[in-house]
Image 1 (tube, rainbow, N blue to C red):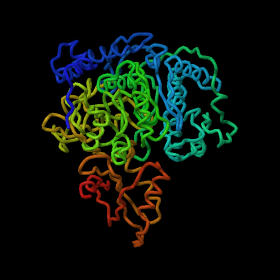
Image 2: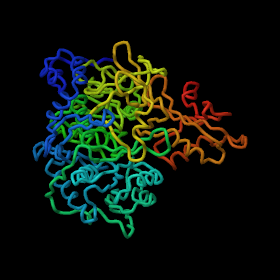
Image 3: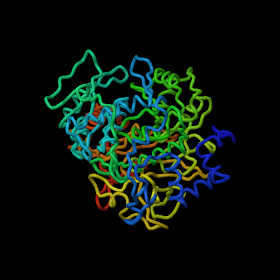
Image 4: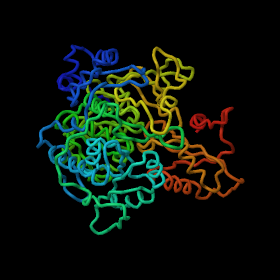
Length: 599
């Protein structure tokens, strides 16, 4: 199935207007200009997004320390949260629905007042500019407001996925050392109740601010902890703390090839990259309604906030699992115009046929990220809104957005990417580092928002050390991509030991460390296997048995239990394969690619 833009839809799109401004006759001309003239492109984009600066930058791009340490908006003083409140005071900024409740709407002024109240509250518990807080919450009104308030006050936010186990939370707290963590008493998902506060207590958090969501079930706080209502100030006036564009505002976590997750700082330029992609590729326009079921601990959480609010649109948040018709009704009632998904959700909708009677005519386009998608399911998604395009979108936490994507000005073909992102370039190289149509992705810096440092690892070693020589310095990314005959792209998965499971990035070594706790396992190797017809990757674990035990009963069940307990209850082991020995290189590294190829 192919969706084709009309001449009118192209002209009315954000990309189309930029093409008209520069008199480009094709999108390809625009993309080429955006990468050949990066400084002009990003300067115009910052102006188009109306990024508010107390002191304007002296250079849009400063390369005094080289492209690996590029400094965008050099010399500026700003607070990116100021750029999130440029719409009319009475414009809708956030729409939400709690379980078994009606849809609620929050104006920009109401959201700004809440943000200011929270920003004023930090000093009452000793939190000041430069300190770090953590947030372990589902995406709610309060979650969004806490996040924006902290950044407005010059405080760094470490974000944690609410489904993580106490052990995984503890690891992230140890890396970022927040002075306080925000969470809520309980989380209700699909009629099941989970204790969030208790998990954070088990993670040995120093101090916790707890939002109360339950009227019947109560939690008893530790002496050092405080309830939300006792924390919150009534003062609605707050002046944003000004920062340089290079100062950290957020710490996100992304698993690489080691057991400890990478702690990746975001700054204002990362937020601008997210807003830029949302403006150009998801075509977010003023007073649109953007819904993307996500979490603040995944990069799409902060992305959703910045890409929506900087573009003067409204965020739509559904407080329950987006798996049944009730979510579909929320999309309908909220008049969602851009709906983001992960492919496994679409597969569930298709199997249950739960969305087909709804009116999603307000949707202008979908967007899909987090997993490899399946063409059949994406075509099904397109038809749920009477043939609307799906913007395939792939990037990374270290990018703050996408490097390969689709647009609303090109033909949309299910499960393929039509272009490299505007202002962004990369090359595909084979194992001998020769340019190829099917190979590993290497980014070509500088790119607005690209990370320059890591909290707990050597940034240069991770991304630049021993990268191949090309026309310019290349940056390692880890995805494998294929260029199709029509010039579009198809993603094939990861070339390193990282994997995406249900939209959450995790390393093979993290999975293996959990599996190796089983008494009958001597050693193990985890891989992600992409189905032949496309779709989300499946977790497969190979293991070598200890002491030649032959009892294979419940081995898969035990593997599933340990992964859920140690890592994330959302991860699912699809196959647990006994093997005599794991294939290794001469230097004793596990050859996971060989296991993938032979599975």
